[in-house]
Image 1: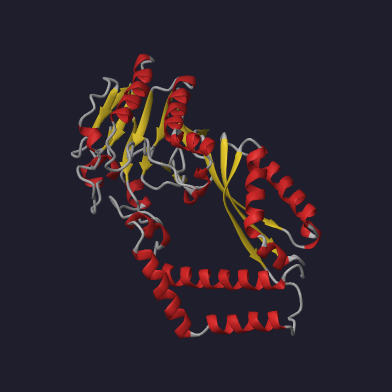
Image 2: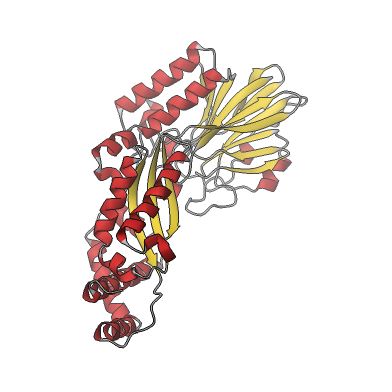
Length: 410
C-alpha cells in the first residue's frame, strides 16, 4: 500500500475576513489559521506514513511578499524531508504571480513541475505527472502539455483548473470531466475551486477544496484528501481547518420568543449545540433568525442589543464567535389601522416607486465610490448587487423606524 496526501489552495498567510475580528482573541486565532492548516497537513502526512504530499496549486496568496511566510513554509517542508516524504507541487494562478515562489530555495524533497509539464517516478509502478502555470492567466487548456500515462503503472496527475467553470472563480486552464477521463490517468489531483468535490471515481477526479476557509463564503469544515493505492485506489478526508465559518438559521416563532428570557434561552441552547458539533477548533457564525414571532417589532427595535447578547452567548461557548446577526422575521399580526401601520404602508409604497429606487441607488453608489476597491468588489460581486443593496438598506431603515414608533407594543 502506498499513501499520498492531496491538497490545494492553501493560500498561506492569506488574511481571514470577518466582522468578528473586532474581538482580539479571535483575531489572533484567525491570523494563524492558514499556517495551522498547513501544519495539520504535515502532521497528517507523518501520522499516515504517506510517500508524498501533492499540492495542486495556490500554495501562496497573490502578490504578498513575506520572509516570515517563506521561513514558515521551509520549516514545514523540512519536517517532511526529514521523514523521507516527497512533495510534488504545481504552481497555480496565485503562485505564478507571487514573488516568493521564485526566491525560496525549497528543500530537496520538493519537486516543482514547470510550465512545460513532466512526470516523475514516485515508487515502482507509480508515476506523478504535473503542469504548472507559467503565468497568472491560463485561458487555454493545459491538457496537451501532459505526457502520456506510463503503461502498466498507476498514474497520478496534478492540475490547477476551473474545469468547465465554477461560481465565484475565474476561468483558468479550462477542461471538462470527460476530457480528463479520456486522458487515461488513474487519479486527477485538482486544485483551484475552493469547495471540495469528487467529480468521478473511475478514474478518480478530485477537487480537494481548500484546507482552511477564509470568510463566510467559504463555510464549513475543510479537509485534505488521503489517497491509498493498493489493489485499487481508496480516497478519504482528513480534517485540517482551525477556524470554521458557518451559517445557521433559528426559527423563533411561537413560544421560542414569547418574552426576552425565552428568546435568550432558545438562542443559548442553539449556540451550545452548534459549538458541540464543530469539526474545527473555532467557529465564526453568521446567524439568521426567522419565523413570525408575536414580538417581531420589539425584536427589530432592539436588534443592536440582541446582537451584543448573541455575541456574548457565542463567546461563552468557548468555541463560537458571531460574525453577524440577521433578522428575517415575518409579520404575524393583522394589518392595523393606526398611524404607525399607515406609515409603514406608506413607506412600503414609496419604496416601490421607480423614482425613489433610482434616488436610493444613486445615494448608495456615491457612498460606495468612497470605499477601497476591494471593499466595493465584496459589496458588489455582480451587476445586480447595487440594486439589491439599495433595496435592503431602504427596507431595513423603514423597519427600524416603524419598530421604534411601535414602542413596547407587538
